[in-house]
Length: 279
Image (cartoon, rainbow, N blue to C red; front, side, top):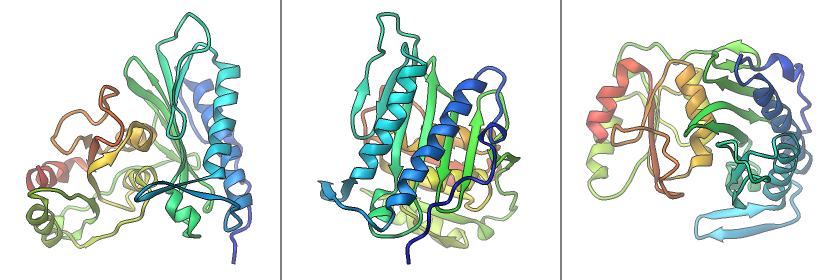
């Protein structure tokens, strides 16, 4: 059975707060909800699914949501650049670049979406001076809006959220999307130390779940891009998580090429131990 379209039950103006980036955050929330409506209208009724690579697909919904967001951003902030999964980088519309870039994943979890698995989202972030300053991750199937700004709290549907507070490694629930040379043994060591491992298929939504304590650890060794983590990484940080690359360095760096990013997010009390096991 299809999940019906779920209009938001809350005023978007109450779902995120920021003194410096309030208008931008509210625009991102509004656009995320509009894109979410498109996703739910076509959920389990897709007309076209294309293979984008050996392990990835793209749908007409990806393109529709991306176009919706880009059009509204360019109309409101013509001096801002735009960077999204399907169309890549779009320079600022005028000759005076603001130094700001909107980074968008129009449908994170496309394979889930195309297969009728209700774990997907839209992610919108604003980057200024090389770092995310406002972000929203919207899950339309649950009508959950995760939002945060560099000068404000992390929120879910307007209410503050925090990372989990479990004391023991043995109680943690993790997502470990790690592989490659030398990782089999390291991953096994982590799995022996935590309670459970779950893989959900959407990096942005999983990171948002770390922010609210549903997951305690998120680790991915490769395959990520800026649009996967820009919004959710900021939200997780504002919720109190320690977020780094899997090497322990900065988690956000636009000089990295797409698909070459890694990420480790966890509560501060456990991040170092997980990093030591995986690093």
